[in-house]
Length: 419
Ligand SMILES: Cc1ncc(COP(=O)(O)O)c(C=O)c1O
Image 1: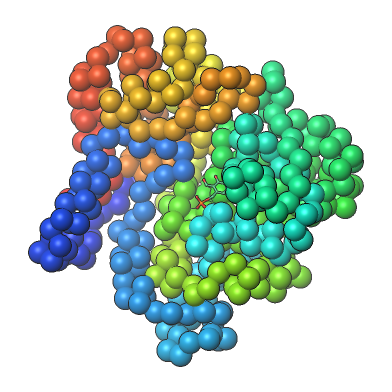
Image 2: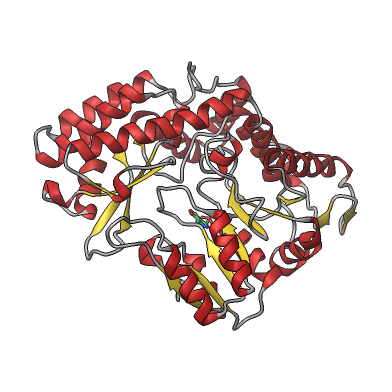
C-alpha cells in the first residue's frame, strides 16, 4: 500500500504565483522541494506533511490575530478561526484520549516551557534525562531557559544495555525530591515505561511531565504506548511522525486545564497562529484514519529492518534495535566517527543527524524512518539503505555511485507525486 500524498493543484498554483511575483524566493522553494525529493530524508524529527496540511498553512488564516482562546479572544473577527481551534482541540482530545488539549504552542520547546510554567517555579528541582544521554535542550541545558531557571538533576541510560536506568531515576528522586520528573528524549529508541515513571513520581511527590515530541505520532497510530494516562502533562511536537505542521501541543487532565492554558497564553505566548492551528486540526484528522494507523506501524517495521540491517553491517546499534521510528548507532566499528559519517552520507545524498553517544567520547548517528515511510518505502528499501550506508563508509561505493543510487531510490518514491 502506498501512503504517499497526491499533489493538489492549489499547492502548485501557489508556487506558480510566487514564481511570477518573486522568482528569487520561488527558486529557494523549488530548490528545497527538489532537494527533499532527490535525497533521502533520514532525520528522525522530519516528515512530509500532506498537501492538505500545506494548504492550511498557506491559507488566509495566517492573517488573523487571535490572542486568547475560542470564545474569549482579545481581538474581534475571530468567530471563524475559533471553529478551527475548537476542531483542533476536539480532534486532539479524541485522538489521544485526553481530557484537555492546548494546541497553541508555537513549537515543541514552547510546549515544554508552558508545561514547566504550569507546574513549577524558578529554582525548583527537576529530574530529566541528561543531555549526553538523549535529553533535549529544554531538559536542563545551561544554554537554554531550562538550565538557567531550574535545578536539573540528570538521570541516564545504562552503560551496557543503553536502556533508561529506572533504578537510578528512583534513587535520584528519593534523594533530590524533585518537583517534577521529565520523561522523553530526542534519541531514545525504545518505549518508555510511563507506568514506572508514574510510580516513582507518586512515591516521591513529583509531577510527571512526558515530553513525547518524538513518539506522539506513533501513539496516535497505536504503535507506541501512550503517556496520557500516566503523566500530569504531556507536551509534544506536531511535526515529527505525527506529520502535521511545525508546532507544539499539550495534553492534560481537566484539573490542570486552566493552569496549562494560562501557561501558554498569556504567560509564554501572544497571538495564536491560526493557520498552524488549522493545519494541526487537519493533521489530527488524518492521524485518526486507518491509513495513519497502518503508516505508524509501517514506520516501526521499517525502523526495525533498518536497525537490523545496520547491525548486520557492523554498526553498533544502541540497545540492539528499536521499538520506534528512531535508531541511534555508532559507526566506529566501520572506522569512522558519527560526524565524519554524516559528512560522507551527505555527499551521497543521505541526510541524517549526529547524536551524542551516552558513554562515549565520539558522536554517533541518529536515523529515523518517518519520512521515507510517508514516501511509501518499505522493508526492502530499508534493507537496501543499510547496505548502502555501510558501503559508503567502507569506501565500497564511491560518493558519485551512492548519489546515483539514492537518486534512483528517491525517484521511485516521490514525496509529492505529480510534481
Ligand atoms: C524531546 C523533544 N523535546 C522538545 C523538542 C523541541 O521541539 P522544537 O524544535 O519544535 O522546539 C524536541 C525537538 O526535536 C524534542 O525531540
